[in-house]
Image 1: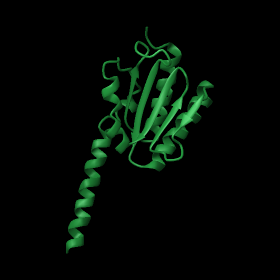
Image 2: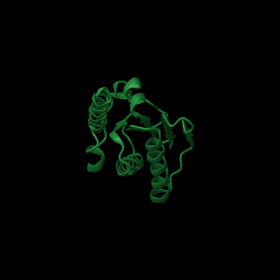
Image 3: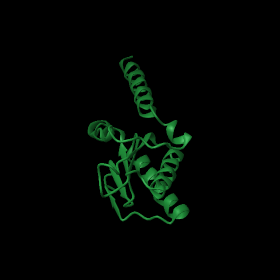
Amino acid sequence: MTATDRSIELINAAAQAAADKLAHDIIAYDVSDVLSITDAFLLASAPNDRQVKSIVDEIEERLNKELGAKPVRREGDREARWVLLDYVDIVVHVQHSEERVFYALERLWKDCPELELPADAKETRGKAEEHAQLQAAEEATHTDEDWR
C-alpha cells in the first residue's frame, strides 16, 4: 500500500507552507505500510516556540484555503514545543528544535519510504544544525566580550 494522491497533495501543501515560514529540516514519510490510521507523516522544526506556532498556523490556513482540509485534532498548542495536526490522511508534527533532537522521530520512521517534497522544503535540510552553530558562535562571542 502507498500514500494516496490526496495524502501526497496534503503533504506537499503542508511542506510548502512550512518552508514559507522558515521551518527547518522538513521531511515526509509514507507510513501507510506500517500504520493503518494514516498515510504519511510530515516533520518540521523551528528554533523557538513563536516560530513553531507560526508554522502550524500557516499549514492549517493553507490546507484549509487551498484544499478544504481541516485537522480533526490539534495537540500541543499551549506549550508550542511539539504541535501535532491530524488530518486523518496525514499527520503533521512541528517541533521545537530541542524536541526534534530528543525524540528523533526520523529514527522511528527511517525504514519507511521518504516522500518527494517541493524544492523549497528540501532546501530546509540541515538548517537546524546551521542555526545551532550560528547561535553557539554568537553565544561564544558574547561570553568573550563579557570577560573583557
